[in-house]
Amino acid sequence: MELSIFGNVPEMITSAVAFAGAIFAIVQWRGSNKLKRAEFLKEITEKLHSDEKISKILYKIEYSEPWYDANFHGSPFEKEIDTFVAYVNYICYLRNRKIIKNEEFHLLAYEIKRICVNFDMQSYLWNLYNFSKKNEKDCSFQELIDYAKSENIFDVDSKENETKFTKRLNF
Image (tube, rainbow, N blue to C red; front, side):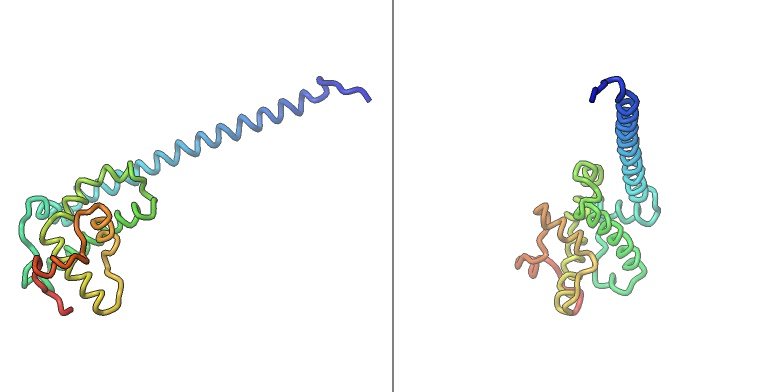
């Protein structure tokens, strides 16, 4: 039985073309994913700065304007804050689940840290966390709380919080 290298040429060419096609498809797919991720991050950052209600609250926090007081719960502003914090919590959820990579989260880190260091936000999260804990429920904004804790920004379990913050909820 005689083997001819030239007899396998069509098969080798077919395999090479298929392999090149697979490599090209993978490169295209990766490039497409990067563009989709970039667009997704753009949407997130734009909403933080373009949505009128969200940006209003972000600036209130940025300039340390007080907002969490005895009149907060039950006020129309409570719903606005809850919507805002839910959005930030969602961003932290995406990061914690590695849907947003750390290097991508870097684009949002400044805003998230400013939110977490804000005294009124800490007080609000501390009250919600302890209220939820007392009622044996998960806190609505646990992802944000976990982020603040992991970055050593704020620890809701710290005993010093009992003297630092005013208790505004029944827990």
